[in-house]
Image (cartoon, rainbow, N blue to C red; front, side, top):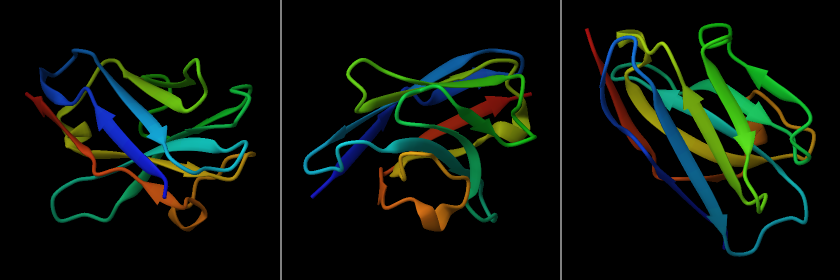
Length: 123
């Protein structure tokens, strides 16, 4: 059984930065992409960013493009999300997940999910 654990969430003022990390363990495919999703109170879980197995291609939601950076760690069972210029609208529970090697943006393409980490951005 695959397990993912997110960390790095917290409280930050608008304009600040925060880095989230996620580590996967257990039985996994030899290669897989990893992605970040978020869910704000009263809203559906939405795509934030994803990175392919090789780390050569990344994908971002328009709302975070230019501010957030996703990257694979070393070893590749880890993924990071560097969040800069944070806005109150970024407040949400952030989840990491594993997906197909070529990556995807839809939630249904991802198989394993972490429990989430809370990010709160104050104005």
